[in-house]
Length: 445
Image (cartoon, rainbow, N blue to C red; front, side, top):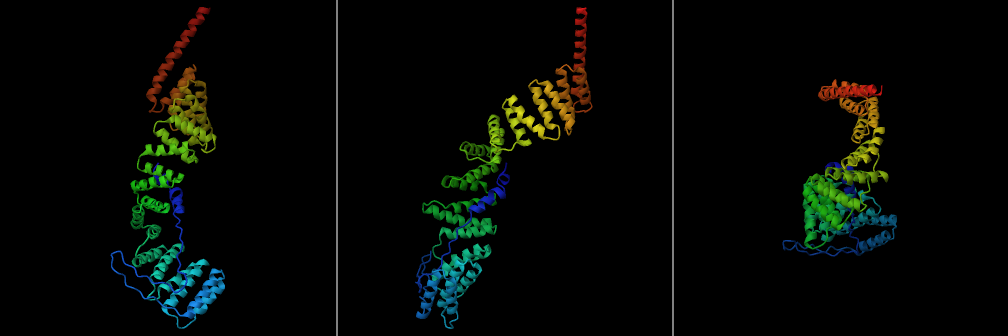
């Protein structure tokens, strides 16, 4: 019951990827023009080079404002026409071109024309001497757009470029980079920015976002680092308690061979009514059997089958019968075994049913089951079946048929010694019974 089987790509990772969907909210510079320049200091304390505040002509400013009003009124056709008209102006400054393409990008994004939006942002960034705010916002939004079209390598390249020009990156930016590396299946690289984001949040005394923890969890999973994955899961179930996180934690304990912990979690979930799927309940039943709690397993299986959650197939019915048998509830072990035997084409389960009948001293029913087993065929050990049949026939005083069964068993060297012992004993008992009957006959006469 390893994590790789209990948490397959379709059950574990598929759920993770759905949960990992990163809500990308592009940050567009569409504020009233002209933009304000910034004079910031780097983390090392050195002064960043001051960029001049770009200028914009009144004519261009007026036309951009008109286009902005059309776009905000959702008249995108007219807005794009106004922008295209402005683009035909021959003497636009670099800054004016940058703002023009910024408006194009925003409009294309709104229309979900992502390729056009990307091309427009590339044009923004191609202009020299951009204001820092416009450059950083454009880079960050461009990275997110590459995420949208699933060009993850480009997204990673752009966000890394953004890190070189921004002064105070947030944990969201590190999460974005981490997710980019994750999508590229570079899990070690993905962990670096994610750990940094986690440290930033913890350093402020804040609660980590669920998506951050999910990204960390899936990276650790893909790297096979189940110990660290477990620590993340503990935080997830504490902060964002969900059934899937508890189940993943149970599977992780299984991978770490801590099956007692796995059983405890599943049992807690079952008692809370959270373990609703049949395969989940079967997993708990098997853990009960493994930890020598067959009665709990039997009760769970019987209830699950009664509710239609656990399928009444051959395997599950056999498990239920075995659970009742190990719980020393021999009578209760019979109905599921009878039901399972009826579903099989070979005689193996009929042979097992016969053994159960013999244990309960119900020899006539054992004989009937063994006859059915031989009729169905496909027995792995027909010699053992004949030993059982001989025993049941002996107990019902059918000595001749019993001897015949033991002779058949003696043909297999694996059962020859036991069969020959029984042949001697049955022959002796047959003779003793005959002598007893003859003696009684003489007394009557």
